[in-house]
Length: 124
Length: 273
Image (cartoon, rainbow over all chains, first blue to last red; front, side, top):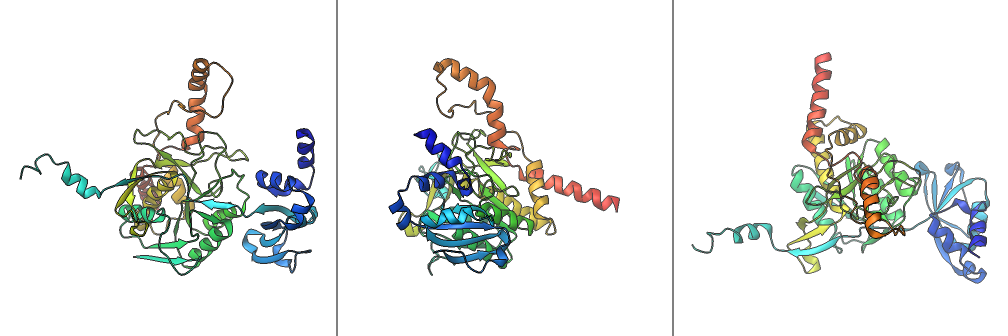
C-alpha cells in the first residue's frame, strides 16, 4: 500500500506540487473531498505576464510578475489540470509563515532588577 | 522614528507579543535608525502572500534593511514564493535578515524564507556561546549551506506590549530574537557607510564572524538503534563538526570585526586611488 502510494506520488506531474506535505495531503483526499476542498495556491508559470485567465474554476487573486507566480483560489480537483500543463513549473500551497517557538518568561524592568540587587540599597 | 502599517486591518498594535521586543532590540542597538513595522498577521500565523505583500510595500517605502523574524514549518529548497521574494529584495539592494527557525536539532530543517540563497539566515546561540540545540540546521533541501551565521537568541530580555496584560519585560528564546541583533548591526554599518550594498553587507557580516563553541551534539535527531553510550560517543566524534557546520554557518556575528573589515577595505581603496 505504501509502495503504491509512493509510486503514485512519484509520477509526474504530481512532483510539481510543493511542499511534500501538500502533495501527500492532496493524494490522501477522496474524490468527493477533492471536489469540495478549497485551496489557495501559488502557480509558477513560464511567462506570467501573458496570463489572462487560469483555465477551470480558478480565481486569480494576485499576479506577481517579478516572482513568476500567480496567486489563485481554486478547488483541489483543479490541481491535476494545473500541474499537467507544460506552462506550469510548480504549484506551492499558501502555507502558514509564523513567528513561533518563542519561550516567554515574565521579567521585571531590568533597571529595577539592577537597583534591587545592589547590596547597600536596603540599608539606606 | 518608528512608523507602522497593517495589512490585516487598521490596528497596528502588537497582539502577539513578538514584534514589540524585536523593534525594542533593534532600536537599542541602532537608536538612530528609522524603523517601519509591517503588521502582516493577526495571531502568530500569517500566510506567504501576507509576507510578500508586506515586503513589497516596505520596498516601495524605501527600506534598506529588512528584519524577517518568521519561518515556515516545512523545509524548502529556496524556490518557494517567500524565498524568491527575499532574493528579489536582495537583488534590489535591500539587505534581508531572516530567522533560521527553531526546528533543530534535525538536519535540513531550514524553512522559508531562511532557505533563500541571498538572505542572511540567522541561527541562535545560548549564554555559553554554543548553538542552541533547537536552532534549525542546514543544509537546505537542495544542499546549500544555511544558516549563514548565528547570534544570541536564548534568554534575550526585551520589551513586551502592555496590550497583552503582561507589560514590562520578558525573556525570549528563539531565532526570531537572534535576527534583530544582526539587523541592528547592519543598521549601524549602513549609517557609517551609506553606500555599501546589500551583498557587501552580507559579506562583511559573515567574514567578521567568530567561531562558536561546540555543543557536543547533546540532543540528536532520531534514534539510531545503537546502545546509548555507543551512539553518544559516535555522535560526539563524528557529528559535532558536521553539526557546527550545518548549525552555525560562518559562526557568531561580531559587528566590530565586520566594521573593521569594511573600514580596512575602504582605506585600501582610498589609498589605491
